Length: 144
Image 1 (spheres, rainbow, N blue to C red):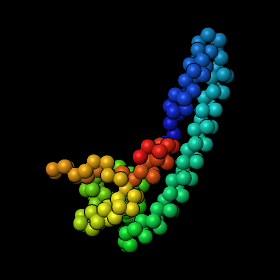
Image 2: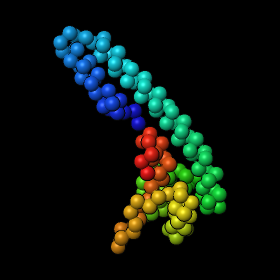
Image 3: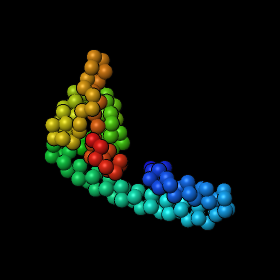
Image 4: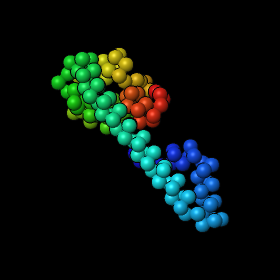
């Protein structure tokens, strides 16, 4: 997730100023300095996010074990980190856990506040859940 667009968007005025500087004054050095600074800052932000994700993974390993008392902790954890927004059927498929057992784990994780239901089951369409702590780390703000 190395996106410079968020940096460029938050520094829009300087971004356009530097592009204009190339057109008017052939100021490639100014543009390169700006662009390299964007790369360095984005890399630093990504490094912080990776550390937070790794810490969250370790913390969730124990929390999920305490919540579910399941032998499938790693499968559950890996499924949540691989796809933090999912339908019940996706969770069952990704973990390889029998549907009724998986539904029980989802219920326990929801009750513990680890999962949040985004859309309830409706007719043949299954519920949609999310793993808000991971999404908040990835987004860099409290979204869920």
